[in-house]
Each structure stands twice: as structure tokens, then as C-alpha cells.
Length: 108
Image 1 (cartoon, one colour):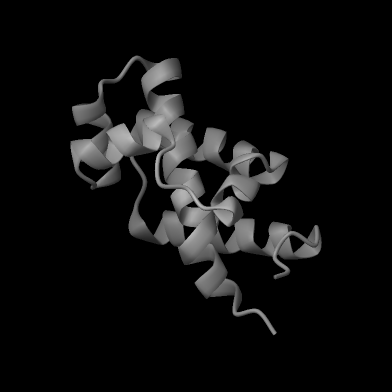
Image 2: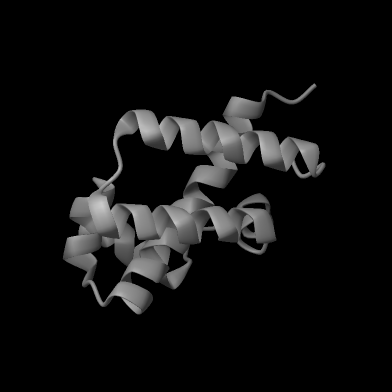
């Protein structure tokens, strides 16, 4: 039986960080230092996200998932326009998890 929160943290959140970083740089013309500050990570982490280095097959599976990509686009917009509180992020991640489970994407 999969533990959904564990799967989210191990595979979906890294995929989201990669997708959001890429969108903030490409669609909102931010540099990697600005993205790092918004995401509360280091600039080298953003560089890794942009290059998609160090990704497992399970992370890549979520990088190509339509539901994850839609959530990443919405989160990137929210982060750019007004920032995102921890509470809002938690709600968005739980909603994404629910959608992924409904779609059958959270199986091992």
C-alpha cells in the first residue's frame, strides 16, 4: 500500500520544483537567483532543476504528467503574482495529491 504523502515528497514535489523553476525563468523572465529566493532554495538547486539533472524515472514520470504540469503552471503564476503562503501551498499539494490518486497516477 503506497503512502501518498511520501510519494508526493519524494517524486511529485521535486517535479513541481523543476517545472515551476523553468516556468518562472522562461515565462516570467526571472533569473535563477530570483527564482531561488521565491522557492526558498539555493541558486545551484534552481540550476539543477533547469537542467533536469539528478532525476529518477519516477520523477520524470511526473514531469510529463498533464495534471502536474497544470498545477505547476498555476503555482508559478501564484508565486510570481502574489507569493504563496505555506497554508496555500499545503492546500494546493493536497489537492494535487487527490487529483493524482483519482487519476490512478499514485500507484507504485
